[in-house]
Image (cartoon, rainbow, N blue to C red; front, side, top):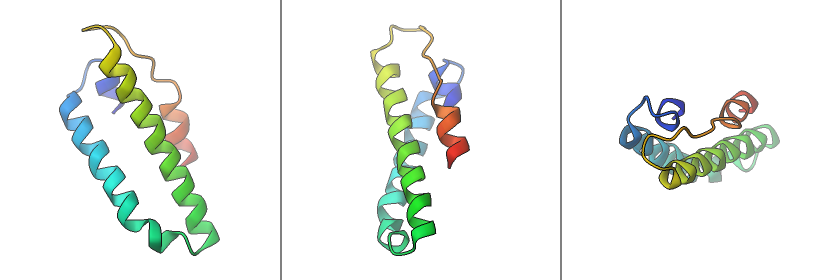
Length: 80
């Protein structure tokens, strides 16, 4: 994801990975919601998904070859 946002990586591979990540969260959410610790993990994982979606939105709007700031992604991963 970070490589795709700075132009060095494959955007399509990052998009596929993001899509798979979000599907796993949707599938696992009912199992994780019952336990308080697991629910906190789910909340952090969903927040990471929001940050990644925001990065893709900025990447789609950026002119070809323009740098896209990656701040927030590292923080979200560390929080997870």
